[in-house]
Image (tube, rainbow, N blue to C red; front, top):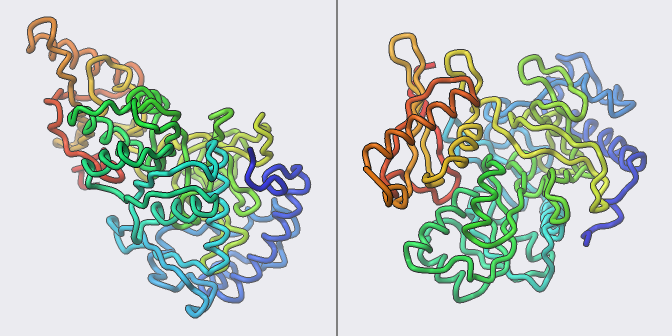
Length: 435
């Protein structure tokens, strides 16, 4: 099933012609309506008329999150406030929040892109969707909600938190799909087990998980605990919210990007040089249909790669691989680049551990230190001496991290349920260094 066959299966040549037409229009519009872009283009010596082909886009300057913060709150808007029907904002935990606006047409576009995602996941109007993404200024909750309604499905707007009540509703209402962060899915599975609920007996058949990087191993873990098929969704508030890209149920190999609405490039995060499709690098998005808050060459800091080969599901748009980390949350430990998702992949492969961990980075003298705290399963102590079992397990994990990632770490195994639980995005890393 494909939601919008006309656009999702466009031949490449027709798709690129549509992209070019829309790109020319949006570059003209931002130059004449957004002071930031007029100055940035003039400083780079480029004009809207310089766009003659899609390849000309790389002549234009990048937009960064700092640019959005510098123009807080509404300096990047390309439409008057009288046309803005919705505002969302990031949490602002690392500085001023980034504010995004939507016109009515933007909301309609977003709703359709989310409906496409749900259909790609194998959902129809006959499904009931338990939406545990956070509502409010965060884009996740309302983005998924409007897409579910556009599809005609029933939606339970439960939002995040209040986990015991969520489990009760999952039992009583019998939803067939769930949307939340992957770490919260694990939290639900654990809480349900503690309450004596057989989570695999629920009616859930599809899980749509995003908003944080997660590994293939975590997918396997979630599927085993909840008895569903887990799919990856990608989005970010600045570009639209959830629904920028989505895996299809047929292949589950890369997320289909809504290329009739977004142009995507891959760049070397260090040099900014464009990389060919298929190379691993930082994703850069240009929005080509947004009215209120269009962005030109926005650096996402997300590390992934594009998959240009056509998918057997029939969709012709490029896919993107799962996000392996971010160029700005990449940890450099004694000269070695480490992503939290790489550590997670090591941990999930070790028997006797729970899928809850914390990474603590510090600096003692001039030396970076890496500590990984991970919860152990109660089953670990069924056969043998507790202290010896823990010591052996810690030694195994230290060796695995060294072998796979080339960095030395201290590993501390902690009691079940002793690490703080996530009710939204998991905070996996504490970096105590004064960098």
